[in-house]
Image (tube, rainbow, N blue to C red; front, top):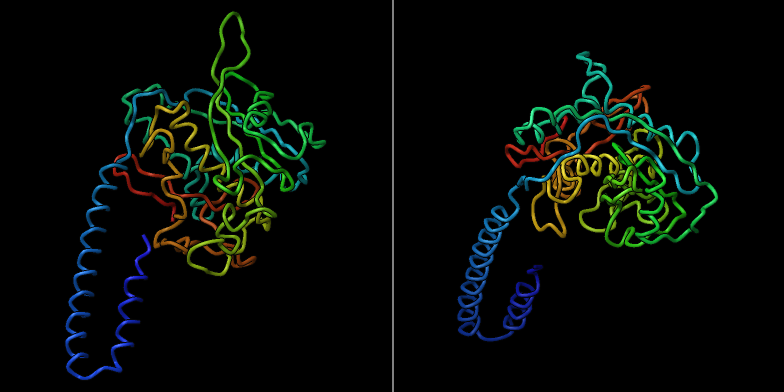
Length: 339
């Protein structure tokens, strides 16, 4: 709750009473000081109580459901027009997830090292077999003619996701900058979920899907921060995007966050904190945190590319650099960063 109005009222009243006699002013000053002291004390007590309650409520928990395991293909459904260079930013990120981790200084920190932190979730389930998750880039579908139009509903996103492989897969729908999607910008930058695929041999398997939109022309300050001036909150200069594309570098952040949430909470009963209807997951619980020292309006002490001036925290395939969100360490419920 914003608490500036009571303080403003006290100050305004004080200015009015400066025109009265000394006795009245002295009496008022004592009262004003007492009221101000009491107000601050109550606010501090209230804030401390709410923080304690929040910490107890938002403790990161495992809800006994399955996590994604085995060999999983990440299939990309491109809806709308994307340049080949833009598609390469995403595909290089996906292949970087499973690249061998090299100990050399030049390759670290890496996308693969960032992804490896999700293994802690599997280790805590006491299912050793579960740790054998392996993601790979699967098929790509291009829908450059906007087969469903330029304004999509949630059900249409699911229809697009259903075009990908429906077994041992995560189907990722990526919508272009000129495509409107229900809830995009107003309440979300992307989402993930699951659905039943077509019946095969009398059985219907569940598949996971993700949707992320290109926010560059619609709400980059919300969905591509810190590469664009934020819409709300503390204002700071935008950082230079590592792949020189605000929209796509923002999409990488959201795809990364949703991938972490998908594998650790694919069906709504895995790892998350808070209410099931609006869960905070492995990465979404650390929104806005990208490096040590982060605070609202500041992404943290990131690495800086000396040539381009771009900010990043992970190296990827083909010389790529990316900015990836912090991931909650399930053992401590604290946000863990690469740098």
